[in-house]
Image 1 (cartoon, one colour):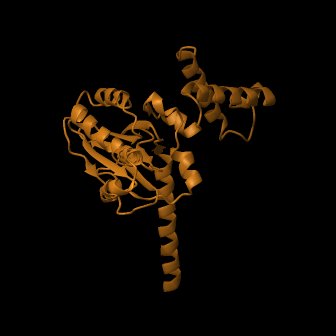
Image 2 (cartoon, one colour):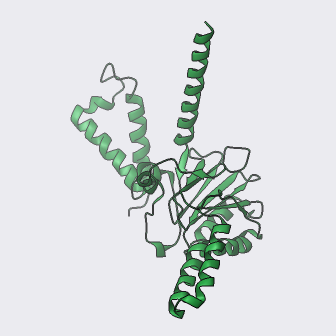
Image 3 (cartoon, helix red, strand yellow):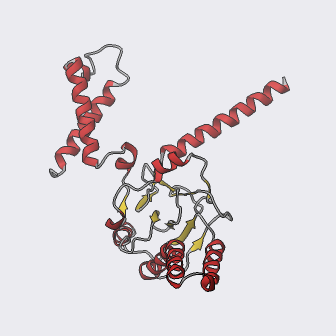
Length: 283
């Protein structure tokens, strides 16, 4: 009997863990390279996550007073922060100074500084042009994004204080997440558990590097479409095809006995999609 209770307890614990993980994934918005996202406690997708950082930096913050969080996958583009600043200022009524700021990288500052020191020490053994080139590469990949973040934090948030949250590792991909619905701080960064291909799919770049940072939207991320308008158009076309194939009764609550469980949802979905399309300007 005790063994049965033990097995039942273990099964329940496993089930709760799976359900908890599924719940987190259902409200997670992946922030891609060269993009940013903003979330509030009321948003459906209010957990922000990024990874596959390489030389890039995850820059994120929490404003508990306004209930607003943000995450940016910074890749060294010096023109990337204007849109983020404007959106945060609008979301918090200008209260940017209340943000607690954090940054995560793949490699610790110790590793970056050690690499810079090694290249610097090679001055006597390398041609000058090669040495200068190596210095530029190390500084660019190791410190450009961090310097950019600190300058932006001072200008927009009025502070130099950014908490660096980087695991003690010299290699490997790091994943970090930030939950707007949580009363605590951001999750502790951890090694990515997914394959490199899956990491690229989640966090890879979607637009040209020189175009600056762009905001991630739930519709674009979840449906993987070029724009919200394309997403709505896909919904309408799919439902119209369904109705043409099965007749007008397909979306009639009394037209197809046995399908009552999904017909009302289809009716609601197509109505909302058409209304949203009608309210948007033509592209």
